[in-house]
Length: 258
Image (cartoon, rainbow, N blue to C red):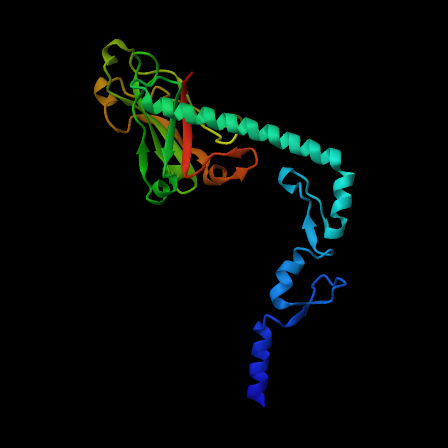
């Protein structure tokens, strides 16, 4: 008898034909288990989002009130849809500009500040605590040759909590004609990839700490300047409707001389 009860109980837990009460207690009463998902997509008492939630309407209601909600809020929904359409056009335009800048940065033989630099495969670099160096760029026409270094997992006081960035000088063809040590400030900007606003910008200066020796200009030496706590990991990975720095495992920087 107990075995029969066990088999019957197990069967009832899985039987696709077993009638189940509608969880919304609608007038239909009960529905076969296999049809419950379909029923809930049609049930007049199911709680649903407004059909315009993707453009900003946050109202929730039972399904039978949805038509009335749409009729009462036609103008508001239209305004939300127009605003979202305008935003999408702006984002698309900025994405095209960003891609064009990246292609231009790769195609130019001599890259001069301001220069756009992209890093792809970022998460792997962070996992492996990789020190990444950009291609060479010039501070200005016939100016200093430089690298941008990015520590994906952070460095020093920014280790495991921040992204770190540094600028290096590299031995170049115009060094003999340039003043030494390099004095001035550079602006390093982490670009927002979905809108032309809310970029993260930090100003870095050598603070005259680079020694007065042309021999130290070459190579990935300790003669660099930058920010160990350039941006926190939390802010780097944060995604909002108007801001995303890390997208498709890539980040974009722009370096400018002030």
